[in-house]
Length: 243
Length: 339
Ligand SMILES: Nc1ncnc2c1ncn2[C@@H]1O[C@H](COP(=O)(O)OP(=O)(O)O)[C@@H](O)[C@H]1O
Ligand SMILES: [Mg+2]
Image 1 (cartoon, chains in turn brown, green):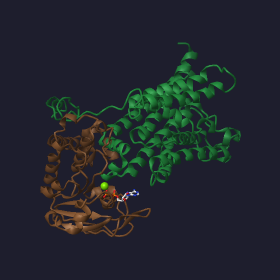
Image 2 (image 1 turned 180 degrees about the vertical axis):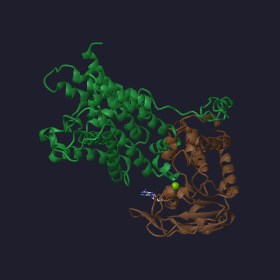
Image 3 (image 1 turned 30 degrees about the horizontal axis):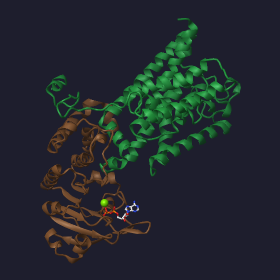
Image 4 (image 1 turned 30 degrees about the vertical axis):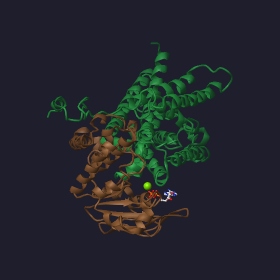
């Protein structure tokens, strides 16, 4: 695919496959077009040319909410919590609530949707516990630290039960002591059969948890393979490790 | 209480009821969902006109001194319900144009411009709703049937308003306290993140515009059935800012706070001056009204943007420190819910 912004070729004839059930890293220097790629995949941007196949189906032109309903979830590079919702509410907003979020369901009242709400609440509690964030469960998400906001966003996406999760720099701004819980969460997702595509700069982490790595530079994919192979690739060394 | 005072009080209470319904509706749009509907007043006006022409009968009655479309003489709750329907339809129409592809500040402009155009149309297309002169002599509902003295009828109408308010409040409360209400607040807080999680942001916004439009129309219908007249002067686009001020001052997003705002702003600043004698030259009191409302909005946005009673934080008590009434995680809550 290709996508330009007022003459800047953010994505320039880039092409790659993401293997189902694997964790794939998307790496590359700043401005390489990684975030633009996320937005095109998740339906927020239309490519100028090219296509995106999800489960073998063309999804260019699908709106983000329809893709989310089909299990394709994304997070954002900048923190995008719901600031005036509590942490728990942020998580619940991610969960599917087919009864309580319809107009009829809401008007029918609490009895109609409370069971679903309780089940989601229990999942939220387990997730918050795994990130050691139970203590801020009732705080407004807007009051959290930058790193905590990123965690809330990750948990919120997990609550949505993704099949394909696109994470834009999930570790940026995360406290070093918490990095391990994010890694554990991603590994849990993989063992649950979720496909993950993550943009990440920390190559140590990439080497540990990613099955495959895609390297972008100047809008193009310059390499695609396993981390240890890429370390020997002169083009990658030049574009990424060089300076 | 002297009967003059009773007239005064009951009239204020009816105005309060109208403001309550309108403010809750506007709060659902602006405070809860973040849809800046600056043309809100149009839907109140539309409801008032609808109810008026469906109560007045054909425009040849009363000597044919006023001209309007669709004249009919329908029994009481029908004009009110029809107003709700027309309000919903019109807001669906405007919403589907204004909300689809635009960001929220542009949406606000679409609504504002629509309000200005609508006043011009109602004023200049004289056969529509009698132009600048407006409609008058709208009979009060059931006044012929209940056989009450004028003063008792005032209180009867206060009772009708109370019922309407209760219904509107329960409806809005169910909406805002449900998971759907949470989705609406998510849309308000971060539209892209909400979309990314699977919420159809356009549809949710359209939904609150339609529900709010129907409620606004009901408030207008209830008002015109009480005061008996309605014209372009009742709904210049600025009137939306009276309700907007009520929402901001009372506490955007909080239905109780907004009720307080509806008491303070439209009733105290907008209606009370009508009862005080004019001073400082003709039109001075009226002009000061807008100054006071404008300054009040600015002061609150600067110093207390959350309003007098801020939006309530919804605690679920997952940490075990506070027990949420719905969480069902704490034993005592489970017992109370019969589990
Ligand atoms: N909305 C936009 N408008 C204009 N230029 C943009 C926009 N988004 C990204 N770009 C440009 O596209 C290029 C790729 O950006 P991005 O995808 O954010 O890179 P990365 O995530 O790899 O750092 C950059 O040169 C950036 O300035
Ligand atoms: Mg980026």
